[in-house]
Length: 269
Image 1 (cartoon, rainbow, N blue to C red):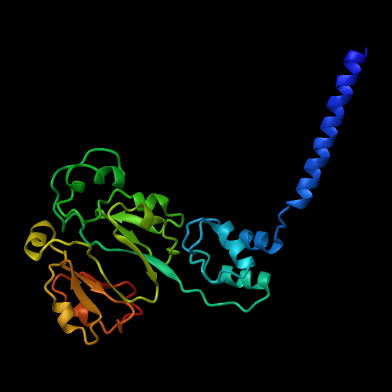
Image 2: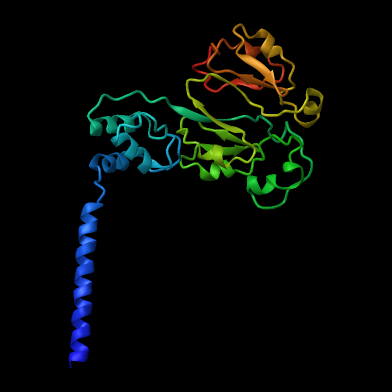
């Protein structure tokens, strides 16, 4: 009987001791939860898109509660989310700079040439891995298979006439589409931006004319006519420095290929 009872008591004593040690350790090493972080996370959209500069909504919420992040960095959530966070933190609401996605390609089916007919998975990354970077003659152009549209949680992107088109009203500027584009055609810009260049090609003018009738040919007409030097042609393609641009619209009116466009016609001058 002793041979059974003594080992059982010893095991019970060891288990009790370990339990007490674990309970003590949980008290000593416990990490206090900030209830405000949980409240903030509950009002964030939960997209975990990273547009705020953090790995996800929980990380952003924790940073706000610690005073390490501003409350107005959630572009998809907009002003309503910033206001809700301000209430939780007991501070004044900060204005949110609304952002949107812009796509640097205007090469629709009727404007851009193809090298070959693609028959395969309707996915831009898959198609871009084929010979020549895809079927489109312009290796920089939108392939139009909708990888960006598939990841958009607001249904703000559609494929129209062979290229991706953004609905500015629906777009929250989360950046998911930009991450999904294998051609790096999508940029996230403040909605206050007036003019963008709808081309991303680095091909020289003569070569571009053969591939796409609406591609930038690097003619520098926009650069020469900009009164404040906001446009430079780099790598055969026009680039707008938005911090310098005064939205006068001269670049748009002078561009022979009409690839400099106002993303918001109502706001542009």
